[in-house]
Length: 69
Image (cartoon, rainbow, N blue to C red; front, top):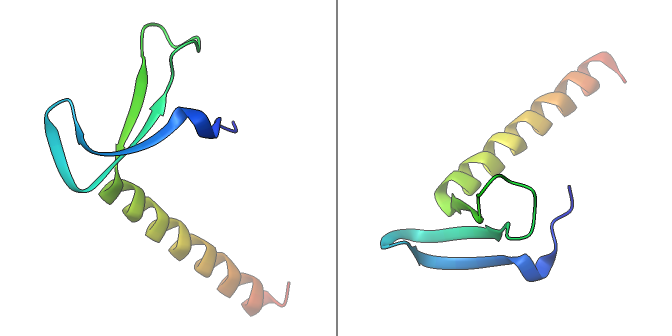
């Protein structure tokens, strides 16, 4: 799902909680989400997921190289 840029924001404080790397906040208002109004990700989790994704793509590339695909 592509998410509208105007509904994405960054915050260092969310609901009284602070995070050194901040939070990525996706505004869900108006979407059919059964009462949820926002989706909040700690940027440390985003960075960890990004690093894990990089590892997965590197592993896939190595397998393709190994089998000559």
